[in-house]
Amino acid sequence: MMNKFILLLFTFTSVLAKSQQNGNDSSFVKAKALFDQSRYNESIAAFSQLISQQPELSDAYFYRAHAETELALYQKALEDYNQAIRIAGAKTNFLYSRANCYTELGRYEEALADYNAVLQNQPKDTDCIYARALMFFLAEDHKSALRDCDALAELYSNYPDLYTLRGNVKVELRLFKEATSDYSRSLLQNPNDTNLYYLRGLAYFDSESFKEAITDFSKAISLKSSEPDFYFDRAKAYCAINEIQNGLADFAKALELNPNLSYVYLERAYVMADQKKNKKAIEDLNLAVRLDTTLAEAYFFRATLRAEGKKYKDALADYTQCLKLDPKNKEVYYERGNCKHEMKKFLEAIQEFNKAIALDSTNADYYYARALSKHKLRKYQEALTDFHLAIKINAQVAEYFYGRGNAYLALGQKKEYELDYKRAKELEKSR
Image 1 (cartoon, rainbow, N blue to C red):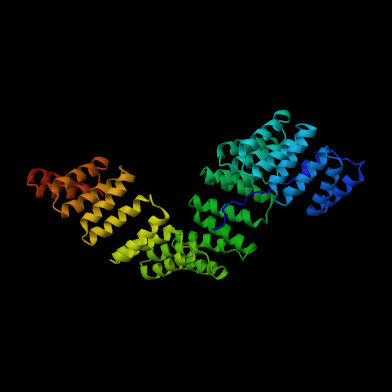
Image 2 (tube, rainbow, N blue to C red; image 1 turned 180 degrees about the vertical axis):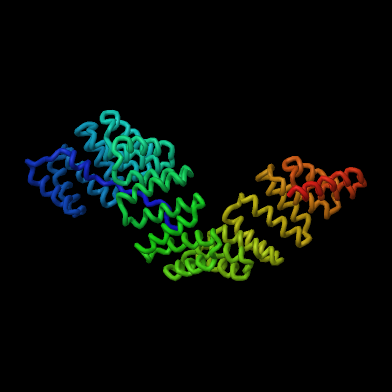
């Protein structure tokens, strides 16, 4: 699936305006003109020739670094920024540009050090505050990103793209309603921005405001009808309000635009299964795993549906594939155990439940399932121990008490059996 957040690209306009101009050198002027015309490769060549003649000209390194940045040659750009700083010292615009480069390279601690140095000298530099906020966002330090966004809003409430970024940050912090407010403010500045409608739609969806989400996805579609994800997410919103036919139509449109989207088949499979159309759901899951053999969720769901249809061998094959992709998935071991229990392979079932419990010893269902298999093997005392453990973790499940009651009965402890059955019936009535 495409990235749900449209990351904002750095621009260097303000930085270049701050940079020293070497107007006395015609070679510098020519190289700079090539840069201004977006002829970056030629500009790099021209600055390289100038550097060979004047190896201590800091601005030549600085502008060559900018050209390299435009071509995504970040490591080379970083080397040139370092040279510029070595020659001219830690000038504000040099540090700021190097910080942006560090951010692009994912070297966030070094980027932070440079941004902080800039802001120590110029604490109200709005470009730097925004860039640092974006860096924090990329580094997944969302609370710090929000703090910088809020500070920037105080200094310059109409800073371009501020509210889009803050909306993205709030989504990551699960402040979905606040995020929709920020996207709305950004739309006041950019009323025809397709991605903003899409982002706000996603935030509405996450806040369970499904009708508002549908409105925004529809607006995005009206502005750009060729994007399959807009239909995909509107389909999910339609299904969330039980407008299934509209949802299915949007899934179909998304696949018409791009028939290779495995996640669309997966999501439609869930809808089909909810409609008790397991055969169609499995058909979609077959397509999903054909397109993406690493889609563990699709194998797991197909296994679940196959197990429901009592096709346990096929289900086990899918669960095995899940484990190849995710060897520590406790739920897979649990479901494999359930399949083997239904196949009357009780010893093998117990082995699967053991693995699930080894990964998570706090799940009452795992102990309960193992107890049932032990009971089938007439290991009643061992089964009783597992029923005890399940009830100790969660004493609000009637089935656990029925199971333990049966174990007591098998062991000849009729009084305990009667007490557990009484408790089970009380729990059933309170459901």
